[in-house]
Length: 268
Ligand code: NAI
Image 1 (cartoon, helix red, strand yellow):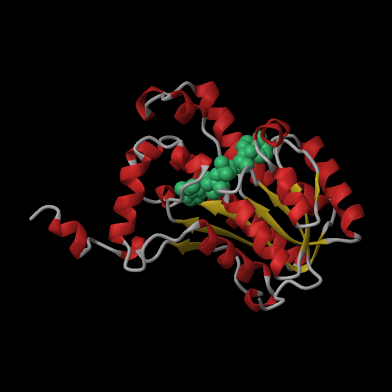
Image 2 (cartoon, helix red, strand yellow; image 1 turned 90 degrees about the horizontal axis):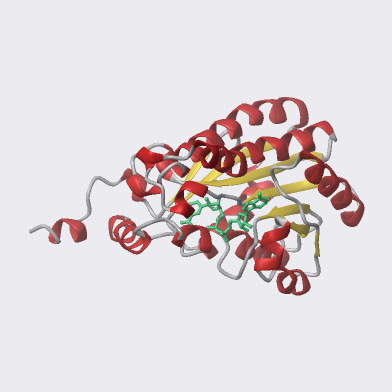
């Protein structure tokens, strides 16, 4: 370990169970000397086992529905009290589509579900940043990261309305990132991650084929949740101070491939 986050304080959203990208990131932040508050929606706290992670990392859990500005205000205020000062890093690792959950095809959406999905998956990121910004809760040279997927740019039919939610999320990162950079010297980026076996990931129809295909197409193979956690650490560290407004592809090379030999062989 490198002590890359020694003295840094943060908030980590979205650790549901051991497979969550946020869970792995919290473990790595802890190893690197960072301290943090964990948060998730109240229902997810009941469903998962975040308290085990809290014990392991000496952190406290503050429930917050990321679509509720009141919850987020309470979270940020409490986090600053618990951690003893302003925040250096934030991980937004939240995504959910009701249309995906209910098996509604992209061409047959229930728009109430669509709205709920973009509120949870994208607008919540704006809300998190607006609360942090208004409360002046971030330290200078702080870092805010959200997780995205390449369906924001390219067609993956079964990713459904999450593709649109991710495009929305990435746009919010750029738009808010401008003001956060200019006014507070805080950077905002998204990590566009390989398909990963988590609760959210495996909820996508045809996930098994999808993850295997991506793996065979990528010269380095899929990036795992642990790999993603390591990448997030670098973005929270002082080694990446001038990286902002970026959608950072973390995918073993998948995004620049046309076709790989392994995939070609399946058709020969
Ligand atoms: P996960 O299911 O472990 O995490 C999703 C989290 O969102 C859960 O902890 C859940 O409680 C939280 N959440 C849902 N509604 C919420 C609300 N209203 N308020 C607060 N939290 C809420 O799955 P995973 O894969 O770790 O997901 C994390 C992020 O990574 C998501 O943004 C996801 O879209 C993204 N991602 C995942 C990929 C994958 O294949 N698993 C690939 C690329 C990006």
